[in-house]
Image 1 (cartoon, rainbow, N blue to C red):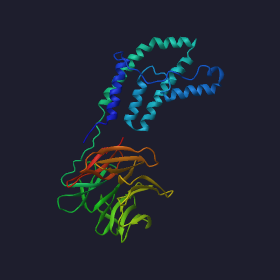
Image 2 (cartoon, one colour):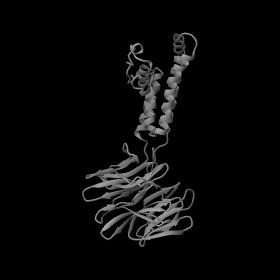
Image 3 (spheres, rainbow, N blue to C red):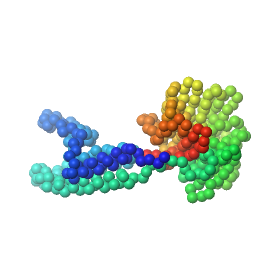
Length: 393
């Protein structure tokens, strides 16, 4: 299911059109406002007022006269990158370039008009250079890596419930009518198979569920570090602390347990008829989904402040399978004939969609977040379950 994001192609097309415009081969109007701060402000207003007005107009970019189309290409490239840590330096350089021209003119000796004449003399060469740079940008955008979102080649059978840590991927696997086992795949090494299901991975620690409850092992040696009895259904792990759901009589409970200190805390409980999906845990926050007959809800708990935030809730869509990592929460949203893999910063903000399915017989289930990607289970009704890797923007 590999595909190139439409936004990346759009940025490449825009860069190509801009390059043709700057080379004089295409007439293309630019969106802009030619009117700036009123000239009379320089006479009537204090310096700090009119200079701030000029700065705001220039800083926003769209409120000033644009002589070249490069600014809009930079905007589209920032959207294509999708990472403010990269986009901010990009526009910092843009602002530095605009400021440098003013500083250069002010530092020259003689009349300001002489500096303008110099700029006008070199402008044709700058325009040609700009066209070449835009052409290079087009080639770089076209050659950008394709987003790979497809089943990982993990062998026969069904693979599901992924968990990842430090380049290591673990998951549950079932081949034919055989039992479910846990598979750990270190980078560059042979896969290890361990008994259990519903794994959770953190470094060399692995938590897995079996018929007796939950056990924590050091997967590199097989040493068992802790065992918690009960009807455990899902688990998350960070260091010696595990978060897991347990069916206890008429209740489903969500527990946080530090196996090294024996600390135990109940985070929430629901009636047994409701669902508490496999939780997510990043060491500072716990996320889980609650599914009732009428509503599904994703909840995010900050352990330091004990503040709970509803990330998503709906009486129509089904919100499940939360995962935490890289300062983000990821979850699956299912509606009629459509499944979305969505994400949001843990501090709140805009919800974005990483990928989507438009088939009724295929859905996403378990999710996991690594340093650079989201792993998600793609389940086909009546067929195999496969794990896909979807790069994070």
